Image 1 (cartoon, helix red, strand yellow):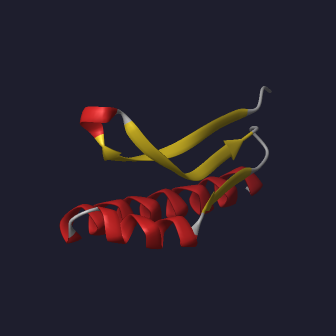
Image 2 (cartoon, rainbow, N blue to C red; image 1 turned 60 degrees about the horizontal axis):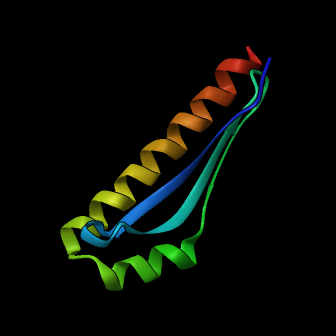
Length: 76
């Protein structure tokens, strides 16, 4: 099976197409891995309104849970 990866970005100024890379998701049919940079998340906290920051944070947690679920499903 082929390896799949996706780089996760957070747009901080969409009108100027400015974004920050904050995470990486990888899967190969046997394993799933997800990681994000907590230090970049702290930087984003200062750049986005509180609602935007909370949305990014909750999405990262949801992706983390999906990656964990994916990993446990593949091990069955």
